[in-house]
Length: 609
Image (cartoon, rainbow, N blue to C red; front, side):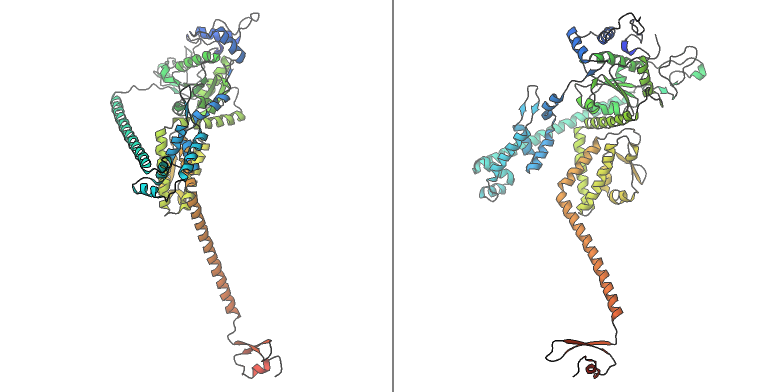
């Protein structure tokens, strides 16, 4: 038996009884025929206490699975058929309301009226039919004039003008029927408001009871988590000597320097503390924000190699005592994760440290050394993988890490938190306009700078330089720091003060959730689009003011130049006379000096008189 906590075993023949290799050794005699992949998988499963699949299934997997990896089935047709199910109904309703200039509730009602229930219980929404239904209603409503006596009468009774026209259209201009429709709609709204209020009160009561239960639970003394200190030069795959202390492990029993006894490997961890079956919504917490390295195992229940590899990885995680954790993702149930990671074969295992993918492998490991090298590169600080990761692979891993961060963040950001952030962001943007004294163009400039700061973090979630904002910067100081609504928006998405002149995001975290930034940026885009006409008018007004100021400066400069020229050319003693002889058309100019006698006028004429 090899003592290396389950890491130092022949991966092809996993055994669940303490890390020993199978009786069938990889060093079998050359004249004995090597077992097939299916035979290896079945043998490993029997030793793990698992029932091998039937022969027909094995035959099918044998045809599809090669070199210990099974290709994922083509899900393009399924993706097309489930597109309508994945559509966010509120997003579609909002878009319809915007395009057709109607109330969003009306769009939701049309979508609900044109939906159908599939055999699996899911609802399928038909956007095209809903738009057609709304257009039909608008055509009917268009036949009822806003200035009609019936509409004026109902509006005077306190009903909405649009709803009055709609009710009259349905009632064929019958006042009594239209009034009955409007009253029934009001009653429905009141009942919905009452039900919503009761639900809110019930939710508050449940939250209060939950808080009281958690408070009582917090009063009980908590068991301290066991920790393991790993030195930089510690090799987790090296056997522990009985004669000399093992170097590198700290925090386990007495010190080797004081007792002279050999260090022991950490005690096995509880499976529930190091092995997790995760959903997409839990990836942010279990993987991206994990305090220890992570093995992310993408598997499927129908995958034969997965059934052999996953139990072995679980045993490794337990025997490692918490040095790393294993997070399992069932690709059939959590398609967003496997799609973000571009998984094409199963099993696929990713090594993740500080939220970033550092390496991966597909299928069963090629052997003991391959798995040892992979774990050493993942666990040992400063260690490199063998074979080393190429620059092209690093760039690909960075791309996949960003995709995983976005998918995990979006799934882990609750709907209530999303709505709260949206309302707060829109409110602060409106306050920003007031801070600019109604100057929409100035407010837009600040909003665009906020958007740029958010986009930098969304594109580069692991780059620390984008997570600090220098408020003393000339542009930031003029457009952001001088306006409290801008600072409030930044703080609502996670930024915190770091001194007087800077804001920092997740100072003690290596990974942050990018979902709040995506939500806030989307709110800014919608706010700018909603106010685009006011912003354009303000921009034109500002441009006109700048142009007028520029023209005023030009006119003033030209006036100064003309005055200077007049002053330079004027002779105070000069006198110019323009004369025309009677009966003649030609005009003669005579220049005289102030001291010349009047008789000189006649002498100065170019003609004789």
